[in-house]
Length: 184
Image 1 (spheres, one colour):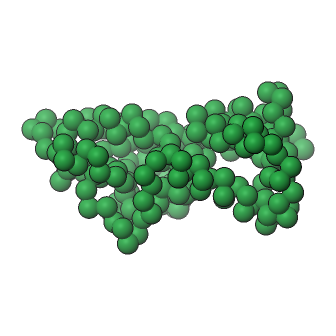
Image 2 (cartoon, one colour):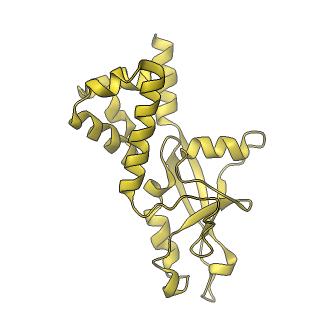
Image 3 (spheres, helix red, strand yellow):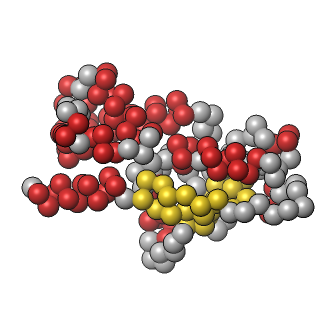
């Protein structure tokens, strides 16, 4: 069991270095923007970790596109926001790992036939909680999530949203902690 906990801790604490670069066709300034580097949790989702990066690039794009939905690609392949970042990295770079992972940022030409829209973080929360519930139903017939209180659901979401997955440990006296993480 101790080994399982160590593996879980490594998974929950795993981070990826990412280099965000604004797509060349989006740049409206003479000066080229610097790339934006950040370490992101492998278990998080892009809409939860890109606020600062978006603000960094807004001054270089056309103001009419500033409110457009941002999307990312890797080597021309749009990245689906509803997949965890670590999964996307493994899917795209599994055979040829490259760090930092260099992604291109877009504010125009949203590929509606490939990507789902993500207007706000509430959509991410709904998707995440639905995914956790689906996993619980498949593995435990829904017994774990159904016994959790609303505050436990909120703590689970806040831990993911804040990239502070350590809040999901038994030492913080959160009932959701190890029982949920280990079972699901």
